[in-house]
Image 1 (cartoon, rainbow, N blue to C red):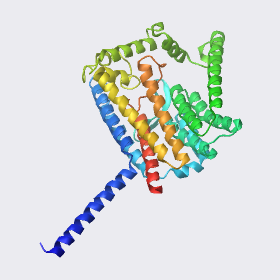
Image 2 (cartoon, helix red, strand yellow; image 1 turned 90 degrees about the vertical axis):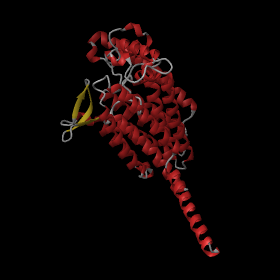
Image 3 (cartoon, rainbow, N blue to C red; image 1 turned 60 degrees about the vertical axis):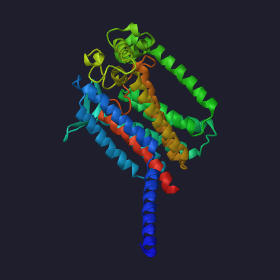
Image 4 (cartoon, rainbow, N blue to C red; image 1 turned 90 degrees about the horizontal axis):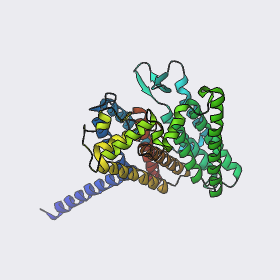
Length: 401
């Protein structure tokens, strides 16, 4: 080959390699690999769990689960391609949208009752149902982050700290009024994490925790008096919610309802052994002993089917997801987006700890789903959107760089 032709060939090869390197760098700069890998791993493993459940549980529709994943991926992609920084300046609009989402199930014509709760809406034309409070959780994260970012990482006065706490109380109380205690606790924990990361002093936070414990104790004492005088209909805390607290203290106190559920969950988790019973062989859920095995008690189903090894795999994927999201927060130079990241981590952390904790008797029983694993399109769409938000924050960091 002539020297000139060989030189042109080498130059062309260098250009191709440079183009490939730039494309690879661009892909990595707009997608956080750890978050992406953990997300895909959790959805894949969750699909395997729901498919296993669908073999023995009629309500666990695998096709509906896949539809939720498809819609979630679409929402995540749309959010990933968006610039979220402008949301920092519309805190009032975020609060209004948050409240509207929370009370949307009370709108005539949209309200849909599911399992005795009115927290769903039904779209009449397509017949699909959705739980708006899942989106309200994300709106609360944005709302609290927009308020927290105004203090530039340092809250100097008690008045400002109390203002943030008061703003968090608005969506928290609205969800309580709607009747969803579990979701209200998720919102409270995510918002509290944002307030702490906004620069609140340690002594203020500890004083608030002590005040909350005292207030809850007072409510429980007052509620018992009201219940004795006027009956359960006038109580601040409904009987089923009180039963869940009592069962948490002593599972044998109620062997007919929540206590029974917890005992069956403990049996399912313990019977899985190290590698589990295998797909389709989960006797506790398959035989109907474990209620809501594909939703609330999905971790018990997972542990019985795939054993300790499967449970550890899920915990590792969750740890990877949250640590990678914290890495995104650290790398972001925008305080608002950083607070959004830590709020999402707080939301995930509480849901994971509560769902797994209630399955093994460490936390009271609530209806909080396990992210990316539990059956339910509303939760899946919201959790996938949260991943899209994190990836959007990573993409904004890359654009700024």
